Length: 432
Ligand SMILES: Cc1cc2nc3c(=O)[nH]c(=O)nc-3n(C[C@H](O)[C@H](O)[C@H](O)COP(=O)(O)OP(=O)(O)OC[C@H]3O[C@@H](n4cnc5c(N)ncnc54)[C@H](O)[C@@H]3O)c2cc1C
Image (cartoon, rainbow, N blue to C red; front, side, top):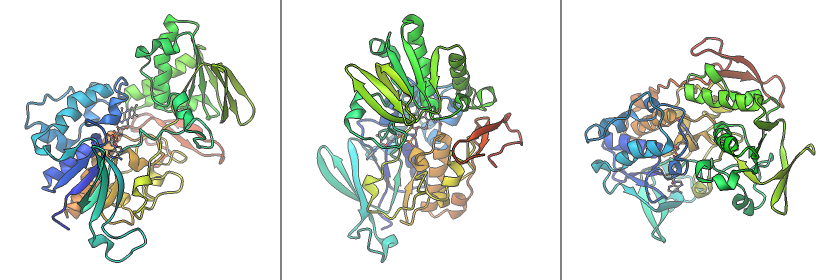
Protein backbone atom coordinates (compact mmCIF):
# COMPACT_ATOMS: atom_id res chain seq x y z
CA UNK A 1 0.00 0.00 0.00
CA UNK A 2 2.96 2.33 0.58
CA UNK A 3 3.45 2.84 -3.14
CA UNK A 4 -0.02 4.39 -3.44
CA UNK A 5 -0.55 8.17 -3.43
CA UNK A 6 -2.25 10.25 -0.77
CA UNK A 7 -5.43 11.60 -2.37
CA UNK A 8 -6.45 15.15 -1.48
CA UNK A 9 -10.06 16.13 -2.17
CA UNK A 10 -10.31 19.78 -3.22
CA UNK A 11 -7.79 22.27 -4.61
CA UNK A 12 -8.76 25.12 -2.32
CA UNK A 13 -6.14 26.85 -0.16
CA UNK A 14 -5.97 23.98 2.36
CA UNK A 15 -5.97 21.18 -0.24
CA UNK A 16 -3.16 22.93 -2.13
CA UNK A 17 -1.23 23.48 1.10
CA UNK A 18 -1.60 19.73 1.78
CA UNK A 19 -0.17 19.06 -1.70
CA UNK A 20 2.80 21.36 -0.95
CA UNK A 21 3.53 19.54 2.31
CA UNK A 22 3.21 16.13 0.65
CA UNK A 23 5.63 17.19 -2.09
CA UNK A 24 8.00 18.60 0.52
CA UNK A 25 8.03 15.25 2.33
CA UNK A 26 8.48 13.20 -0.84
CA UNK A 27 5.04 11.65 -0.53
CA UNK A 28 3.24 10.80 -3.77
CA UNK A 29 -0.10 12.61 -4.03
CA UNK A 30 -3.06 13.34 -6.29
CA UNK A 31 -5.46 16.27 -5.85
CA UNK A 32 -9.01 15.81 -7.18
CA UNK A 33 -10.80 19.12 -7.79
CA UNK A 34 -14.44 19.41 -8.88
CA UNK A 35 -14.04 22.81 -10.52
CA UNK A 36 -12.33 23.71 -13.77
CA UNK A 37 -9.61 25.61 -11.87
CA UNK A 38 -8.10 25.75 -8.40
CA UNK A 39 -10.01 27.51 -5.60
CA UNK A 40 -13.43 27.23 -7.27
CA UNK A 41 -15.25 28.14 -4.09
CA UNK A 42 -13.25 31.32 -3.45
CA UNK A 43 -13.84 32.43 -7.03
CA UNK A 44 -17.54 32.63 -6.13
CA UNK A 45 -16.80 35.26 -3.48
CA UNK A 46 -13.89 36.92 -5.29
CA UNK A 47 -15.35 40.42 -4.71
CA UNK A 48 -15.21 40.05 -0.91
CA UNK A 49 -12.21 41.46 0.93
CA UNK A 50 -10.60 39.08 3.40
CA UNK A 51 -10.27 40.37 6.94
CA UNK A 52 -6.95 38.62 7.49
CA UNK A 53 -3.89 40.19 5.83
CA UNK A 54 -1.57 38.23 3.54
CA UNK A 55 0.65 37.44 6.49
CA UNK A 56 -1.97 34.92 7.66
CA UNK A 57 -3.08 33.63 4.27
CA UNK A 58 0.02 31.93 2.84
CA UNK A 59 1.18 28.50 3.93
CA UNK A 60 4.88 28.41 4.85
CA UNK A 61 5.83 25.38 2.71
CA UNK A 62 3.76 26.63 -0.24
CA UNK A 63 5.65 29.91 0.05
CA UNK A 64 8.98 28.08 0.04
CA UNK A 65 8.01 26.31 -3.20
CA UNK A 66 6.70 29.52 -4.80
CA UNK A 67 9.94 31.30 -3.97
CA UNK A 68 11.77 28.95 -6.33
CA UNK A 69 9.74 30.49 -9.21
CA UNK A 70 9.32 34.10 -10.40
CA UNK A 71 6.37 34.57 -8.00
CA UNK A 72 6.12 37.99 -6.39
CA UNK A 73 5.16 37.74 -2.76
CA UNK A 74 2.26 40.08 -1.88
CA UNK A 75 2.79 42.77 0.74
CA UNK A 76 2.18 40.95 3.99
CA UNK A 77 0.18 43.64 5.77
CA UNK A 78 -2.30 44.16 2.90
CA UNK A 79 -5.78 42.65 2.81
CA UNK A 80 -6.51 40.73 -0.39
CA UNK A 81 -9.91 40.22 -1.95
CA UNK A 82 -10.91 36.64 -2.68
CA UNK A 83 -9.95 37.30 -6.31
CA UNK A 84 -6.48 38.50 -5.32
CA UNK A 85 -6.03 35.49 -3.03
CA UNK A 86 -6.67 33.31 -6.06
CA UNK A 87 -4.67 35.28 -8.64
CA UNK A 88 -1.68 36.24 -6.51
CA UNK A 89 -1.28 33.03 -4.52
CA UNK A 90 -3.49 30.03 -5.30
CA UNK A 91 -3.19 30.10 -9.11
CA UNK A 92 0.62 30.34 -9.07
CA UNK A 93 0.66 27.61 -6.41
CA UNK A 94 -1.51 25.25 -8.46
CA UNK A 95 0.69 25.96 -11.50
CA UNK A 96 3.95 24.92 -9.81
CA UNK A 97 5.95 22.57 -12.05
CA UNK A 98 6.14 20.19 -9.07
CA UNK A 99 2.33 19.83 -9.31
CA UNK A 100 2.19 19.03 -13.03
CA UNK A 101 -0.14 16.06 -13.53
CA UNK A 102 -0.84 15.95 -9.79
CA UNK A 103 -4.06 18.01 -9.84
CA UNK A 104 -7.03 16.69 -11.78
CA UNK A 105 -9.70 19.28 -12.57
CA UNK A 106 -13.38 18.61 -13.23
CA UNK A 107 -12.84 15.53 -11.07
CA UNK A 108 -15.73 15.39 -8.63
CA UNK A 109 -15.36 12.85 -5.85
CA UNK A 110 -18.52 10.72 -5.63
CA UNK A 111 -17.55 8.15 -2.98
CA UNK A 112 -14.69 7.00 -0.78
CA UNK A 113 -14.43 3.47 0.61
CA UNK A 114 -11.88 0.73 1.36
CA UNK A 115 -10.96 -1.69 -1.39
CA UNK A 116 -13.38 -4.64 -1.24
CA UNK A 117 -14.42 -3.66 2.28
CA UNK A 118 -17.64 -1.91 3.06
CA UNK A 119 -18.13 -0.15 6.38
CA UNK A 120 -19.15 -3.35 8.16
CA UNK A 121 -15.90 -5.25 7.55
CA UNK A 122 -13.54 -4.75 10.47
CA UNK A 123 -10.53 -6.92 9.64
CA UNK A 124 -7.31 -5.37 8.30
CA UNK A 125 -8.93 -2.06 7.43
CA UNK A 126 -5.74 -0.11 8.13
CA UNK A 127 -3.83 -2.34 5.72
CA UNK A 128 -6.42 -2.01 2.96
CA UNK A 129 -6.12 0.76 0.35
CA UNK A 130 -8.76 3.44 0.07
CA UNK A 131 -10.68 3.52 -3.17
CA UNK A 132 -11.90 6.88 -4.39
CA UNK A 133 -14.54 7.13 -7.09
CA UNK A 134 -14.67 10.38 -9.03
CA UNK A 135 -16.47 11.64 -12.10
CA UNK A 136 -14.13 12.91 -14.79
CA UNK A 137 -15.53 14.11 -18.14
CA UNK A 138 -18.82 12.42 -17.31
CA UNK A 139 -17.17 9.06 -16.64
CA UNK A 140 -16.85 7.47 -13.20
CA UNK A 141 -13.22 6.56 -12.57
CA UNK A 142 -11.49 5.16 -9.51
CA UNK A 143 -8.12 5.54 -7.88
CA UNK A 144 -6.56 3.77 -4.92
CA UNK A 145 -4.84 5.64 -2.12
CA UNK A 146 -2.92 4.95 1.05
CA UNK A 147 -4.55 7.92 2.79
CA UNK A 148 -7.19 10.55 2.03
CA UNK A 149 -7.31 14.20 3.08
CA UNK A 150 -10.76 15.66 2.50
CA UNK A 151 -10.36 19.45 2.08
CA UNK A 152 -13.54 19.98 0.08
CA UNK A 153 -14.90 22.90 2.10
CA UNK A 154 -18.53 23.66 2.94
CA UNK A 155 -19.28 26.63 0.68
CA UNK A 156 -21.51 24.66 -1.74
CA UNK A 157 -23.70 23.40 1.10
CA UNK A 158 -25.28 26.53 2.65
CA UNK A 159 -27.47 26.49 5.73
CA UNK A 160 -31.16 27.32 5.20
CA UNK A 161 -32.94 30.44 6.47
CA UNK A 162 -35.19 28.38 8.74
CA UNK A 163 -34.42 28.19 12.46
CA UNK A 164 -34.91 24.42 12.56
CA UNK A 165 -32.10 23.97 10.03
CA UNK A 166 -34.19 22.16 7.42
CA UNK A 167 -34.19 23.02 3.72
CA UNK A 168 -37.85 22.30 3.12
CA UNK A 169 -37.91 22.47 -0.65
CA UNK A 170 -35.04 22.56 -3.09
CA UNK A 171 -36.84 25.32 -5.01
CA UNK A 172 -36.06 27.67 -2.15
CA UNK A 173 -32.40 27.52 -3.09
CA UNK A 174 -33.36 29.03 -6.46
CA UNK A 175 -35.68 31.68 -5.06
CA UNK A 176 -33.36 33.20 -2.48
CA UNK A 177 -29.73 34.24 -2.47
CA UNK A 178 -27.44 32.07 -0.34
CA UNK A 179 -24.10 33.67 -1.23
CA UNK A 180 -22.61 37.11 -0.56
CA UNK A 181 -23.95 38.82 -3.68
CA UNK A 182 -21.69 41.05 -5.72
CA UNK A 183 -24.14 43.91 -5.29
CA UNK A 184 -22.10 46.35 -7.40
CA UNK A 185 -22.77 44.10 -10.38
CA UNK A 186 -26.40 43.50 -9.46
CA UNK A 187 -27.61 47.02 -8.72
CA UNK A 188 -30.86 46.57 -10.63
CA UNK A 189 -31.77 43.52 -8.55
CA UNK A 190 -31.55 45.42 -5.26
CA UNK A 191 -32.08 49.13 -5.94
CA UNK A 192 -35.22 50.62 -4.39
CA UNK A 193 -36.23 47.13 -3.19
CA UNK A 194 -36.94 45.81 0.27
CA UNK A 195 -34.03 43.46 0.94
CA UNK A 196 -33.96 41.18 4.00
CA UNK A 197 -30.64 39.75 5.15
CA UNK A 198 -30.86 36.69 7.42
CA UNK A 199 -27.85 35.73 9.57
CA UNK A 200 -25.34 37.43 11.83
CA UNK A 201 -21.88 36.18 10.85
CA UNK A 202 -19.19 38.02 8.92
CA UNK A 203 -20.84 37.19 5.59
CA UNK A 204 -24.08 38.88 6.66
CA UNK A 205 -22.16 41.96 7.85
CA UNK A 206 -20.35 42.14 4.50
CA UNK A 207 -23.65 41.90 2.64
CA UNK A 208 -25.30 44.63 4.72
CA UNK A 209 -22.36 47.00 4.26
CA UNK A 210 -22.36 46.43 0.48
CA UNK A 211 -26.13 46.98 0.26
CA UNK A 212 -25.79 50.29 2.09
CA UNK A 213 -23.78 51.63 -0.84
CA UNK A 214 -26.85 50.97 -3.04
CA UNK A 215 -29.15 52.64 -0.52
CA UNK A 216 -26.98 55.78 -0.60
CA UNK A 217 -27.68 56.18 -4.33
CA UNK A 218 -31.22 54.76 -4.27
CA UNK A 219 -32.72 55.90 -0.95
CA UNK A 220 -35.96 53.95 -1.47
CA UNK A 221 -33.96 50.78 -0.86
CA UNK A 222 -35.09 49.29 2.46
CA UNK A 223 -32.78 47.01 4.44
CA UNK A 224 -34.06 44.59 7.08
CA UNK A 225 -31.69 42.48 9.13
CA UNK A 226 -33.04 39.32 10.75
CA UNK A 227 -30.99 37.71 13.52
CA UNK A 228 -31.63 35.00 16.08
CA UNK A 229 -29.50 36.73 18.67
CA UNK A 230 -31.46 38.49 21.40
CA UNK A 231 -29.08 41.45 21.38
CA UNK A 232 -27.81 42.72 18.06
CA UNK A 233 -24.59 43.87 19.79
CA UNK A 234 -23.49 40.23 19.89
CA UNK A 235 -23.19 40.29 16.11
CA UNK A 236 -20.78 43.22 16.11
CA UNK A 237 -17.99 41.14 17.67
CA UNK A 238 -14.98 42.74 19.32
CA UNK A 239 -14.96 45.80 17.00
CA UNK A 240 -11.81 47.80 17.82
CA UNK A 241 -10.67 45.12 20.32
CA UNK A 242 -10.42 42.58 17.50
CA UNK A 243 -6.80 41.65 16.77
CA UNK A 244 -7.73 41.54 13.08
CA UNK A 245 -8.57 45.20 12.44
CA UNK A 246 -10.54 44.49 9.26
CA UNK A 247 -12.68 41.87 11.00
CA UNK A 248 -13.36 44.33 13.84
CA UNK A 249 -14.23 47.04 11.28
CA UNK A 250 -17.02 44.87 9.84
CA UNK A 251 -18.68 44.97 13.26
CA UNK A 252 -18.02 48.69 13.77
CA UNK A 253 -19.47 49.64 10.38
CA UNK A 254 -22.57 47.50 10.88
CA UNK A 255 -22.98 48.92 14.39
CA UNK A 256 -23.11 52.41 12.87
CA UNK A 257 -25.65 51.32 10.24
CA UNK A 258 -27.92 49.98 12.96
CA UNK A 259 -27.46 53.01 15.24
CA UNK A 260 -28.19 55.39 12.36
CA UNK A 261 -31.36 53.54 11.42
CA UNK A 262 -30.06 52.69 7.95
CA UNK A 263 -30.71 49.04 8.68
CA UNK A 264 -33.86 47.94 10.51
CA UNK A 265 -33.02 45.08 12.85
CA UNK A 266 -35.23 42.21 14.00
CA UNK A 267 -33.60 40.43 16.94
CA UNK A 268 -34.61 37.16 18.60
CA UNK A 269 -36.26 36.32 15.27
CA UNK A 270 -36.34 32.58 14.58
CA UNK A 271 -37.51 32.15 10.98
CA UNK A 272 -40.42 29.70 10.92
CA UNK A 273 -41.82 30.31 7.48
CA UNK A 274 -41.39 32.28 4.28
CA UNK A 275 -44.61 32.93 2.43
CA UNK A 276 -44.52 34.03 -1.17
CA UNK A 277 -47.30 36.48 -2.11
CA UNK A 278 -47.19 37.57 -5.75
CA UNK A 279 -43.73 39.02 -6.25
CA UNK A 280 -42.92 39.55 -2.60
CA UNK A 281 -42.31 37.54 0.55
CA UNK A 282 -43.46 37.61 4.15
CA UNK A 283 -40.94 36.23 6.60
CA UNK A 284 -42.60 34.86 9.74
CA UNK A 285 -40.97 34.05 13.07
CA UNK A 286 -41.86 31.15 15.36
CA UNK A 287 -43.50 33.69 17.67
CA UNK A 288 -45.66 35.13 14.90
CA UNK A 289 -43.79 38.39 14.14
CA UNK A 290 -43.54 39.24 10.47
CA UNK A 291 -41.30 41.12 8.09
CA UNK A 292 -43.58 41.93 5.17
CA UNK A 293 -43.31 43.01 1.54
CA UNK A 294 -39.79 41.72 1.09
CA UNK A 295 -38.56 41.72 -2.52
CA UNK A 296 -35.22 39.94 -2.08
CA UNK A 297 -34.01 37.57 0.63
CA UNK A 298 -30.31 37.02 1.24
CA UNK A 299 -29.51 34.10 3.54
CA UNK A 300 -26.05 34.30 5.11
CA UNK A 301 -26.46 31.70 7.85
CA UNK A 302 -23.24 29.78 7.23
CA UNK A 303 -22.67 26.41 5.65
CA UNK A 304 -22.43 22.78 6.72
CA UNK A 305 -20.30 19.81 5.71
CA UNK A 306 -21.46 17.21 3.20
CA UNK A 307 -20.67 13.70 4.42
CA UNK A 308 -22.70 11.89 1.75
CA UNK A 309 -19.70 10.64 -0.26
CA UNK A 310 -17.81 9.39 2.78
CA UNK A 311 -20.69 7.37 4.21
CA UNK A 312 -18.81 4.06 3.64
CA UNK A 313 -16.07 5.21 6.00
CA UNK A 314 -16.09 4.94 9.78
CA UNK A 315 -16.35 8.51 10.99
CA UNK A 316 -16.80 9.89 14.46
CA UNK A 317 -18.32 13.35 14.50
CA UNK A 318 -19.57 15.47 17.35
CA UNK A 319 -23.38 15.33 17.16
CA UNK A 320 -23.77 19.12 17.27
CA UNK A 321 -20.68 20.67 15.72
CA UNK A 322 -20.02 17.89 13.16
CA UNK A 323 -16.28 18.09 13.68
CA UNK A 324 -14.22 15.34 15.34
CA UNK A 325 -15.12 14.99 19.04
CA UNK A 326 -11.67 16.21 20.17
CA UNK A 327 -11.91 19.37 18.07
CA UNK A 328 -15.55 20.17 18.87
CA UNK A 329 -15.09 21.64 22.36
CA UNK A 330 -12.32 23.88 21.03
CA UNK A 331 -14.54 25.52 18.40
CA UNK A 332 -18.17 25.09 19.53
CA UNK A 333 -19.71 28.59 19.27
CA UNK A 334 -21.98 27.71 22.20
CA UNK A 335 -18.86 27.67 24.38
CA UNK A 336 -16.33 29.70 22.52
CA UNK A 337 -16.07 33.00 20.73
CA UNK A 338 -12.63 34.50 21.15
CA UNK A 339 -11.33 33.22 17.80
CA UNK A 340 -8.35 31.49 19.36
CA UNK A 341 -8.38 27.75 18.93
CA UNK A 342 -5.95 25.70 20.93
CA UNK A 343 -3.34 24.15 18.64
CA UNK A 344 -4.64 20.96 17.11
CA UNK A 345 -3.44 18.61 14.43
CA UNK A 346 -3.44 15.01 13.29
CA UNK A 347 -4.40 13.57 16.68
CA UNK A 348 -7.47 15.78 17.14
CA UNK A 349 -8.53 15.27 13.52
CA UNK A 350 -8.28 11.47 13.57
CA UNK A 351 -11.35 9.38 12.75
CA UNK A 352 -11.85 5.67 13.56
CA UNK A 353 -10.96 5.14 9.87
CA UNK A 354 -7.13 5.09 9.91
CA UNK A 355 -5.60 7.31 7.24
CA UNK A 356 -8.72 9.39 6.58
CA UNK A 357 -8.75 13.06 7.62
CA UNK A 358 -11.02 16.04 7.11
CA UNK A 359 -9.05 19.29 7.01
CA UNK A 360 -9.74 22.95 6.27
CA UNK A 361 -13.05 24.66 6.82
CA UNK A 362 -14.89 21.32 6.52
CA UNK A 363 -13.01 20.08 9.61
CA UNK A 364 -14.89 22.74 11.60
CA UNK A 365 -18.22 21.15 10.73
CA UNK A 366 -20.89 23.77 11.39
CA UNK A 367 -18.71 25.98 13.58
CA UNK A 368 -17.78 29.46 12.30
CA UNK A 369 -14.48 31.39 12.72
CA UNK A 370 -12.26 29.04 10.71
CA UNK A 371 -9.07 30.75 9.55
CA UNK A 372 -6.73 29.63 6.78
CA UNK A 373 -3.78 29.60 9.11
CA UNK A 374 -5.56 26.90 11.16
CA UNK A 375 -5.99 24.74 8.07
CA UNK A 376 -2.33 25.12 7.12
CA UNK A 377 -1.24 23.88 10.54
CA UNK A 378 -3.73 20.98 10.32
CA UNK A 379 -2.29 19.69 7.05
CA UNK A 380 1.30 20.25 8.18
CA UNK A 381 0.61 17.96 11.14
CA UNK A 382 -1.38 15.36 9.15
CA UNK A 383 1.25 15.10 6.43
CA UNK A 384 4.08 14.83 8.98
CA UNK A 385 2.18 11.92 10.57
CA UNK A 386 1.59 10.20 7.23
CA UNK A 387 5.30 10.56 6.46
CA UNK A 388 6.12 8.89 9.77
CA UNK A 389 7.45 12.02 11.51
CA UNK A 390 5.39 11.59 14.66
CA UNK A 391 7.37 14.17 16.59
CA UNK A 392 6.62 16.93 14.05
CA UNK A 393 2.99 15.78 13.82
CA UNK A 394 2.56 16.15 17.57
CA UNK A 395 4.26 19.53 17.88
CA UNK A 396 1.36 21.70 16.78
CA UNK A 397 1.66 25.45 17.04
CA UNK A 398 -1.05 27.94 16.37
CA UNK A 399 -1.36 31.56 17.38
CA UNK A 400 -4.55 33.06 16.04
CA UNK A 401 -5.70 36.66 16.26
CA UNK A 402 -8.46 36.93 18.87
CA UNK A 403 -11.86 38.35 17.99
CA UNK A 404 -11.79 40.43 21.18
CA UNK A 405 -15.04 38.92 22.47
CA UNK A 406 -15.57 36.31 25.13
CA UNK A 407 -18.89 34.94 26.23
CA UNK A 408 -20.35 32.47 28.65
CA UNK A 409 -23.77 30.94 28.91
CA UNK A 410 -25.79 32.14 31.86
CA UNK A 411 -28.87 30.36 30.54
CA UNK A 412 -29.09 27.45 28.17
CA UNK A 413 -31.16 29.55 25.75
CA UNK A 414 -28.94 32.45 24.90
CA UNK A 415 -25.39 33.49 25.41
CA UNK A 416 -24.39 36.85 26.70
CA UNK A 417 -21.32 38.90 26.04
CA UNK A 418 -19.62 39.34 29.37
CA UNK A 419 -16.46 41.07 28.34
CA UNK A 420 -14.49 42.54 25.53
CA UNK A 421 -10.85 41.62 25.85
CA UNK A 422 -8.04 43.76 24.66
CA UNK A 423 -5.56 41.99 22.41
CA UNK A 424 -3.57 39.51 24.43
CA UNK A 425 -5.25 40.38 27.71
CA UNK A 426 -5.49 37.75 30.37
CA UNK A 427 -9.17 38.12 31.25
CA UNK A 428 -10.23 35.80 28.42
CA UNK A 429 -13.19 33.72 29.50
CA UNK A 430 -12.74 31.21 26.69
CA UNK A 431 -9.93 29.55 28.53
CA UNK A 432 -7.63 30.14 25.59
C1 LIG B 1 -16.71 35.16 2.33
C2 LIG B 1 -15.64 34.50 3.12
C3 LIG B 1 -14.60 35.25 3.62
C4 LIG B 1 -13.56 34.63 4.36
N1 LIG B 1 -12.56 35.39 4.84
C5 LIG B 1 -11.52 34.80 5.48
C6 LIG B 1 -10.39 35.57 5.94
O1 LIG B 1 -10.35 36.80 5.83
N2 LIG B 1 -9.37 34.91 6.55
C7 LIG B 1 -9.35 33.56 6.72
O2 LIG B 1 -8.37 33.03 7.24
N3 LIG B 1 -10.43 32.80 6.34
C8 LIG B 1 -11.50 33.39 5.74
N4 LIG B 1 -12.57 32.63 5.32
C9 LIG B 1 -12.68 31.22 5.78
C10 LIG B 1 -11.86 30.17 5.01
O3 LIG B 1 -10.51 30.50 5.03
C11 LIG B 1 -12.33 29.95 3.59
O4 LIG B 1 -13.62 29.40 3.64
C12 LIG B 1 -11.43 29.01 2.75
O5 LIG B 1 -11.87 29.03 1.43
C13 LIG B 1 -11.39 27.57 3.27
O6 LIG B 1 -10.48 26.83 2.51
P1 LIG B 1 -10.64 25.25 2.23
O7 LIG B 1 -9.46 24.88 1.38
O8 LIG B 1 -10.84 24.55 3.50
O9 LIG B 1 -11.99 25.07 1.41
P2 LIG B 1 -12.53 25.73 0.01
O10 LIG B 1 -11.85 27.02 -0.27
O11 LIG B 1 -13.97 25.74 0.15
O12 LIG B 1 -12.03 24.70 -1.08
C14 LIG B 1 -12.64 23.45 -1.26
C15 LIG B 1 -12.38 22.95 -2.70
O13 LIG B 1 -12.89 21.63 -2.80
C16 LIG B 1 -13.56 21.46 -4.03
N5 LIG B 1 -14.57 20.39 -3.88
C17 LIG B 1 -15.73 20.43 -3.18
N6 LIG B 1 -16.36 19.24 -3.25
C18 LIG B 1 -15.59 18.44 -4.03
C19 LIG B 1 -15.72 17.10 -4.48
N7 LIG B 1 -16.78 16.33 -4.15
N8 LIG B 1 -14.75 16.59 -5.29
C20 LIG B 1 -13.67 17.34 -5.62
N9 LIG B 1 -13.50 18.62 -5.23
C21 LIG B 1 -14.44 19.16 -4.43
C22 LIG B 1 -14.17 22.83 -4.29
O14 LIG B 1 -14.46 23.02 -5.67
C23 LIG B 1 -13.09 23.78 -3.76
O15 LIG B 1 -12.17 24.14 -4.77
C24 LIG B 1 -13.60 33.23 4.60
C25 LIG B 1 -14.67 32.48 4.08
C26 LIG B 1 -15.67 33.11 3.35
C27 LIG B 1 -16.80 32.26 2.80
